[in-house]
Length: 522
Image 1 (cartoon, rainbow, N blue to C red):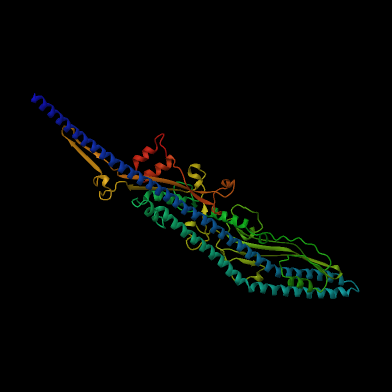
Image 2: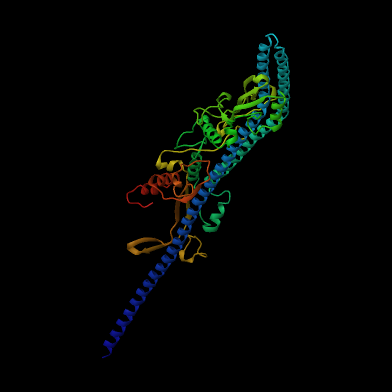
């Protein structure tokens, strides 16, 4: 009976050997599954970090652009205010200069009155009129001399006027120099994705990530340039002429003038010895205007004046948005009529006017007696924007685009980043098994096999939009511009054209082709 017992024992030992082999294989598969799980979770964590970093970089670059555009808007207002100040300076000079002209008009009035008196003194017994005629001529001379005195007073402070005009011009140049500096620095930041503090984003959220792809950075730089008229730009609207840019600033500066330099229309009436006239002239001047004759009445009527940025000095009284007004001149004019009633109620009435202007030729005055020196004005946007680094009276103007696919010219900002998902160091990441993160198999006739347990490099890309919207319920209805600081930034979805442009620029042709397939979510 012993042989059967021996056979059964051998069979059980053989079954126990098969279980060991199956158990070993199961443990191997379990180890590989655990390894794959660790590698997958590690890759997902790095993928999330990379995408968050890409979003943060794109948004941060867009914020830099929005802040730059808002700075252009605020500083453009400062440029416009300089021209408004220039208008006010010319208005004051024209108002000061008109005093001499009013006195000379009064002198002419008494020449007229003297003629009327001499005409009456030719009759027998009318010698009184002859005496009055002589007295009127004397008064005329006094008015003429007083007019010259007032011209000298105006001439005495014209040097301050010239200095103020030069200071205004220097201020505009300084503001635009600052604008160009901001533009250049912002351009560099959105091009390299690391300057001006952007590199800290990578250090904080994705230390192993690549820098912004240089070709994608060039797209960002072009987008930003395309938002400013006059900058070098491809794929959007062409630059407008320097004249067109100048007209925009000219109309804005004229529209923002205060009431006094824009319109000094004085309508007055007089009775007894009262007189009309603008109240901004010194009361001592009016006293002389009335007291020199010693008696009678005086009336200043129809007085009006204006100051504005114009094409030439003759256009100071033209309408508002006149075509072709590129603002080469700042001019002011003052005019009206002075009337005197004297003895025997004889009357003389003469119109007067004065003007002052500044232009590239040095400007001038009428009447010329109050003029000394030159007051130059380069003109609004006197040079092309790209050649306006140190002088030239330039400013930043928004370049709109009528194409909705171009977001109306509002700049877009992209990021494209890569990062290795495999650590490549088994001391830091033992679950990768080896620096290559691979497992190789060899099994007799079945041949060799290879399993990649750790992924290689990952890619993330993002898009942001720099957009304009004024506060309020209907703020979106206002067209984008660089005169109101309402530029903002947001993350924005890709469309297929954007995705292809970015992926092609980054050299990822496979992803570019896949992005155009139907049903692909971007």
